Structures are given as structure tokens and as C-alpha cells.
Amino acid sequence: MIQRHPHDDLLLSYAAGSLDEGSSLIVATHLTFCAKCRMDVLVAETVGGALLDAIAPVEMGDAADVMDRLDEPAAVPSRATKETGFPRTLDPYLPDTTVAWRWFGPGLHYAELLKKGGTKVGLLRCAPGAEVPLHSHRGEELTLVLAGNYHDGESNFSYGDVQCADDTLQHRPVAHADIGCTVLIMNKGNLRPKSVVARLFVRILGM
Image (cartoon, rainbow, N blue to C red; front, top):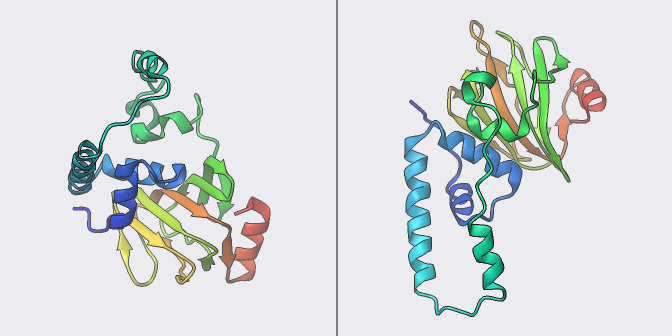
């Protein structure tokens, strides 16, 4: 059972369509796991729609162009979940063949999915017992568990859970000793390494 969810402000911003792409990808993927958050987003969208209905209409600048776009077919991802092993929300960001994993440290491999401005989103695959070097953050970090689980000394995070971190948190995530974990992770700004090993990883990988 999912215990840790995105903050309410993230869900509200997602429902309003105002959330940035990296954070939206985390939230959208979490929604594929979490019925509770799907309902929360549905309620927010319903309330938002009711508020829009109460606003006096205004004339559209180019109604014909808008109607033409409504007739366009929606983009369909080229890969099914069963082919990638990852949630369908990630399909547009995954390569057509194998995932391009890069070594990130002992037992750690990382695959970048999105890099836009100072925001990075990627997959991190952790072997059983593997540790991410001690670090803090220069901005917001969202981590969604796709498989397995990990702990960071204070809390445990399992399938579907989201960890929300910022520059006040310093931690060293450790994958489950028997099953490891795979996570989807979003960072705004580079990590702040707290050890020599962590500094080496950040310098080599640009994290």
C-alpha cells in the first residue's frame, strides 16, 4: 500500500496544468500506481472546471484554428508497457531499443530521460544494498519508486512511494539488501556532494 504521496501543491499544480515537465512526469507516473491521488487530481480538475464555468466567456482570437486542432488525433506512444517494463507515461522519453544505462557508482546505473534548463529526470537502478553517496540538494528533488524499495536512514520508500526533498535534506539512500530498487528521479539543480566519492560522481556525471 502506497504510504508517501506528492505534496498537495504538486497535485493541484498538475491538475491545473501549471506544473513543469519534470515534476509532471513524476506525478503522472505516480498516478498510474495511486488511486488516492488520481481521485485527488480528479476532484481538483472538477472544481477547477466549475470555477471556469462561472467566469464570463471572452471572444476567441482564432476559433477556426482551435477547432482544427481539436480534430487532430492524439499522439500514441510507440511502445507498450510490456515491452519497456516501465509505466506507459515514460514511453515518450525512452529510446526505441534498450535503455542507455550509465555507471553511477558501485551497484548503481543511471539513464537520463529529460534535461531541460536546470531540471533533470532519469531512471536510477540500484543493486541490492547499493548506496547513493551522501548528498544534499541545490533545489527540489522528487524520487518515485518503480520497483523494490530503499531507505535513507530515517524513512523507507516502497513501490509507488514518492520522496520529496529540498535543500534542507541531507541523506544517503540505500537500496533494499535483497531486492534492490529502481526509481524515477527528478532534480532541479545539481546535487551537493558530502563526501569525496560523491564529489567524484557529481563531477563525472554532471549530476
